[in-house]
Structures are given as structure tokens and as C-alpha cells.
Length: 131
Image (cartoon, rainbow, N blue to C red):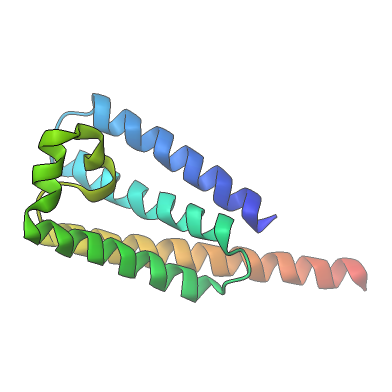
């Protein structure tokens, strides 16, 4: 069940993220939305691959990955690569923005909290159904 949730989250986040990237005007709102959707897509991919991980572990890895990608932008390589193959922007972005780090942290905490709460509710329901 958790794998299915991860798959759905990843597919929906990528679809909405592409819509934002292709149609929303550039600005703070579209940038924040894209950052949050990126975290959700990475979370979904991790849950799909590692459904047994605890919620906090998945959220921590998502945050670590997102921060690493943002810091990697300081090297200038993602911007250079984007000039050679524009779709790479969807994975690595282009330029460092400290606000993105805040968005990643807030979104990772939120998705981790929702994941943990959902798992607890499902566990409780399973226990009460068995009783």
C-alpha cells in the first residue's frame, strides 16, 4: 500500500511540476511550488524503492538529497549542463537560492509528518479491525 502511495505521489508531483514549469509565470510562487513538488516527487520515489523505511528516515534522506542538489548549484555545473540539455534543469535546477533550502526543509517535514500520521492511523485501524 505504501509503495502505491509513493508511486502516485511521484507521478502526480512530476505531472504538476511539469505543468508549473511549462505554464506558470516565473516568480516566487512558481519557484516555491516547484521546490515543494520536487521534494514530494523525491519522497514518492524513495517510498516506492524503500517502503519499509521509517517516515523520519525517508524525510531525512529527501531533505539531504534536496540540500545537496541545491548546494551543487554553487559549482555552476547545473547551469552549464542546462545550456547543453535543458531538461536537466528539472533534476538539478540552475542557480543557488537560499530560500529553496527553507522550502525543502518545510516540505520534507510536512511530508514526513503526513506519512507518519497516515501510517499510525492505518496501524490503529488494522489493530481495531482485528479485535
